[in-house]
Image (tube, rainbow, N blue to C red; front, side):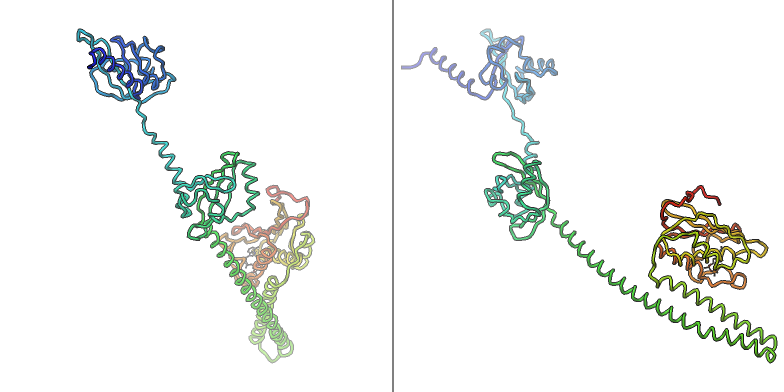
Length: 499
Ligand code: ADP
């Protein structure tokens, strides 16, 4: 027996109701004023409103508040449009990406009475999450239990160690990678538990047996059972470079030490040689000087005045050469002797130096106190004697030499200055005059060997001090040296000294 038209209608509408109940769409109708008239189960699922709560309310509640007006107009136009994508608002305020279609519902007259709206939720692909997942997989990361059991192993880890994810999962990481720890594992784990993280260098084995150095960062993820995330950064190349630098440094140090020893040996030989030669040269010179003088005394009757002048010049030259050799010996002795450095009183040094110098009645003013320095007494006496005798020597004939010796304190050092009112020195020669044999005048005008200031330089260098000169041509000179101060000795500070 066939179904009646009514039965067929009922069946069709039940079928439709079932479709509407299970379809993943929101289906609702609104009247021509936009008031919701019916609301499907799918609509409740998507938007969160129950049927009884939304029927009778304007459909515009689905439109985000900021864009309500244009969206309303948009809904009015829906009847004529195909599916459009837009954003609607769920009951909890969440914005949903939806694709909306609508169609007019016509009454018996054929005129539209309502609008039927179908909206489906479009799940926009989460690109950020995809990127995060990819980044995680590319990074050399493993998730593991505290006992080492590997729970997760990224592609980055596989690239670093050569073990695939399948080969690594479930293994004990320390066994798989043959980990060598820089400190006991128990102490690393204790730090991890205490602070929640640990970072340090580890030595691992690649699948192919090669050694890898990594900086490993462990972060405790959960406690029970203890699970951690381990991120490993390959530093093998840096490690090799460091080892190479250390090796080269050690090699260099060894070479420098060997060279220095060789140089010192050569220096010692040269100095011994110079000393012996200079020493031995003095004997024949003294012979020349002595016999020259004897010749003048005993044979002056037989030798005419020109001949006697020649002999005097020979004796004078022999004397100058003897002086030169004595100065050279003093200079080379400075490098040879082992220096005893101790507290030295500069006032006593100044008295001894002045005693050695032929002042010829000129005034030498010592402005006490001069202070105490760390130095070597006999070297300082020699230095000061050289500076004072130069200060007395380099004058024009008409000037009366006035020499002052004074000290001042500068940053834990004592600076001793010898000041004169002599001919002065052009600044372009200040550096040069401290070299051996460097003289700015002929010995006929100002006698000398050109070694005095070289002795000052060498002596102060050996004592670890500083030296220098302030002078201009015609303004006098101030030669100075600086050595570490010993004790507080009532010196004026730099800037307050009298000039
Ligand atoms: P020497 O005194 O035997 O010539 P030095 O080494 O002591 O040798 O001095 C080198 C040169 O520096 C001197 O020849 C002179 O030209 C210059 N000099 C040194 N002290 C003074 C000074 N107080 N005033 C001017 N010139 C000086």
